[in-house]
Length: 209
Ligand SMILES: N[C@@H](CCC(=O)N[C@@H](CS)C(=O)NCC(=O)O)C(=O)O
Image (cartoon, rainbow, N blue to C red; front, side, top):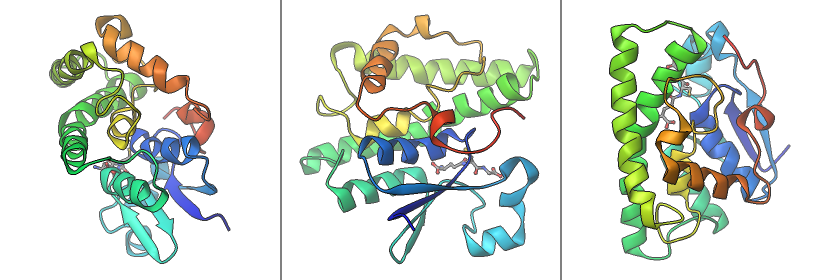
């Protein structure tokens, strides 16, 4: 059995945040496939055994079973000594970006990508609302990255891994990379890291709905 076990599925960018950490940190880990599309996370059994909140990612390590990607990333940074803060000030900055990511950057974009890119909902008012909100969050991050290589401290940290959850997903969203050149350059820096892999090469399961 591997040291770290990650409950995940290929389409989940939230799980990718953790899978990418483990890949870049070159840790001994294994994915445990969760059949989200067939409703596994909604079953009483899965919720009782894995996560009462009904979500992946869930990380198992030693006697711990953790959920919520930001908390897992913070735990992994402490447990491995990699991609964490160098000071109290950096820790606060990292959390500030991870909370922004969970509330806005990932959440609007992930929902847009799911209903527009995967379920092919078309140009509904909901899609347009989500795209506007996602664009606004992307603009804030693009502005922040104008004079920076990474979000915090000029090196890859768990803040970058959190925001990187969905940016490599290939489905159409109606938002183009060329609208956000600083995010595009940041993505290229992450892709150039030894051990980087596309989400669909790192996690098991179907890549369409
Ligand atoms: N804030 C959570 C979000 C996790 C999340 O939304 N996971 C999705 C997959 S990407 C999920 O498991 N959804 C199950 C459901 O909504 O039923 C985190 O960062 O871990």
